[in-house]
Each structure stands twice: as C-alpha cells, then as structure tokens.
Length: 410
Length: 146
Image (cartoon, rainbow over all chains, first blue to last red; front, side, top):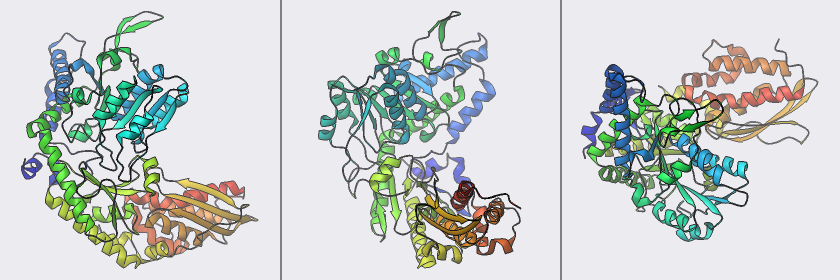
C-alpha cells in the first residue's frame, strides 16, 4: 500500500494547521474521511434520500436497498454468517449499553460475576457497573501485567461458573495491547458465560473474523474507520439477539401493536426503532469498501510499523516514558507516552503549534490511569494515511516541546 | 499561533514555583474540583474572617496553565473581601472570553490573557476560579459583587 497515494483521497490533508501541513495522529479518537465516503453521502442525499422499509415509492426502495446493502458489507467485513446479525447503532458506546441493558440485566442475578480488566475504556466499564448495581451482580477485575497485558492463567482463575459476562477490548485504546480474545472466548464459553468484545480500536485496524474469534457480541464505531460519526455496529450471535430485549421502542421496530401490548420484529430490526441512521450506514458501507480495497492485513502491518518506529524513536529521547508493550513487543498502531516534567496538555499544545494532532488526557480510562500512576498521558495513534515522515514530524515537535519547556521552566 | 503568547515567562515562573501551595487547618473551607475531561484536579482551602480572605492554599495536579492560574489566583485574593475576590473572578472570566479587561485589577493575571486564544485550554485556566466561587459561596460571606 502507498500512504502517499492514499492521502490524496482525503481532502483534510489540504488544510494547514497553524501554518503547517496536518500531521494527524489522533486516529484512535476518530479517523479522517476519504472522498469516496463523502461522495457516497452526497449521492445518497442527492439521489436516494428517503425513509427505509416503508414507502412503496421508488426512492424508498433505493434507500432501503442502499441501507440493507451496507448491512451486508459490514457482515462480510467481519465474516458474520448473516447480515441479520448486524445491528446498526450510534457507535460502540450505544452497542455495549444495548447488550448490558437488553441482554445482561435479564441474565444477571445476585452472586453472578462480570469479568473484565481495569484497563477498559469507560464505555466497556460503566455499562457493566450499572448492570451490576441493578442486578446485585459483582464486577471481578483481571490483573494486568506490567506492560498492560492479560495472562490467560489469570483469566482461567477469574472465570468460574458464576461468571455470566466477560467484557474485553480487543485492542486497548491506551496501551495498544492486543488482548487474547479468541482464547478468552473459549474460557468464557466453557463456563457458560458470554464474551462481549469492544472492537472500537481493532476492527478499523486489523482483519476481524467473528466466527474465528467466536465472540458472542462485538461492538465498534464507524467514525474510527473512515466512516461518518453517529453510526456504529453491534454484532451478536443469532440466539442471543433473539433473546435480547430492544432498548428503544417506537416506530419501525414493531410487529403487531395493540392498545396494551405489542410484539417486535426480528433482529436486527427490533433494535433499530425510529428512522435509522440511513446515511451513516451507507457511508460506513463505503468506508468498508475503501478499507477492503487496500486490505486489512496491509493496514494492520502499516499501523504497527509506524507505532514500532515511534517507540524506537521515543526511546532515544531522554525523559520520555512509553506505556504498554516494550520495544519489539507486539503492539497495535498507537503509542501512549509522557514527557518528564511537562503536562500532556502542554505537550499537545506545543505539538499542535507544529501542526501535529495528538490526544492528551485520560483517554476515557481513569482506572487505568490510576494503575499507571499518572493523571493524564499523551497518545499518538496511526492509520493508513500516516507516513514515516509523520513520525519524523512528531518526534521533531516533541523535541521542541522538551526544549521549550526545559528552557521556559529551567 | 505563537507559543510565547500562551506560555509567558510569569506563567512558567508560577508553574515552577507555585505560591500558596499546601494546606490549611481542617476548619478552613475546602473545595475539591476536577476537570473530568482532562484529569486536572485542585483542592482549594480558604480561611475567611469577617468577609475577608485571611489565608488561602491550594494543592493539585494539572498542566502549566491550570497550576499557574491557581497560584496567581491565590496570590491575588489573599487579603481581599469575598466580594472583591468574586469581582476579580468575573473580570478574569471576561478576559477568558476575550472581553476587554481591567489590567489594573488583574495585575500579573493579565499574563493569562493569551489563553483566551486557545479555546481548548480555557477550562485549564478557569478551574481554580471555579473553586474560588464555590469556596466563596461556602463561606457564607456577603458575596454580592459591588
């Protein structure tokens, strides 16, 4: 793959940021959008716009075919056996909340356990806290190794017949560790538990095969994978989706409505009450086509290479701490770090002055920040349009930050 | 964008050598505030007698802007009445919104004026001031801004 050619597809790289070319390294927060996605959104609104699944008119058919076609693209992308296992949602957060509400709460009782590591993003932690509070179930946290990894022995020890849910991010949004989801799924299933996988940082960056992982639920967001904001996916196994209660009730999700009770459509439509996120889903479909044309294996290699290079280069700067896997260890395409004596906000502001966009803060993972014993960190995260030149620009700007603050407060 | 406009020397000085850092006895008013989006936190303690700020201390962690702002704020309000302190808070808030500021009243706080051009950082500068407003309310002193 050729990142320089790919960049030409992304209009945002024409922007100057504080007089500099944009070096966009905040991809774990959200990705940029290629013209191919923007064009499909425009085409939808200009020539297909209509509500889906209702009107008999021609536009209604076009919109419905485009929307359901996007569902098929998502299903193929994650190797789901059927498009009916793909529910369109607003994003990862909504997907996980729907499982915690509509499935887990009905299956949890006092004494039951939900097993998860303390490194989860708040969106795969708070829904489980709330489900535990509502049902009397307990959260049981897996220990983390020094580098943030999870040992399968610890999973074996923590998951018991009391476990009803195992919640895990495939890739940690802070540490860049790739968690052993397939092995954890096997352990969970041996004890009759379901595994809920947060794919927000994995699905955009590596091949995902839900049948190979054997996960019960998988949640991810469109906007982190070149798609629009406001569209996400919940994948689920058919029997679980059949058992799961809808979160929202209203138009379009119903079968028969009586004055005092109603019945629902089958999955996935029973979870998509109201006018669905039609343009968003179609845009996500276009994003998936774009990614598939390049190849997810290629993208995974590319992102990991840039992260590895960054880890090596940061090791050469005195006073930089890198969190997560050490040099040469497997890591997804993101690097979380701190510069001694300089707050990550200040680091990010100095980088921004050089056109380099990174994230600074707690990355929606406050419990993990406490384990790392830091209030906040900075994070550089890569995607298919980033280059080694971007790494150079980032490292140069970071050295400037060090010099600037060394001078300013020295 | 000029970084020197944001990180003025006086800010760096307060960041490196914070004034009024520490804590007061337990009977002082204490306010804990955090900025949930970034993790900055501050504990502000204030001793108020007859409507006057007799002593004030802070502890916290955060970026240079939030800690320097806290240091300068505590320096500025010590010895002032609650209503004077709240007036200063209003003036400071106006400066953060880019409104013309009374430079005499602000003194060295004027050095934080550059923050108003960095919208993502304004909440860093205002954290300590929000703590001040809460502490003033808790003091029960006449806080009417005259």
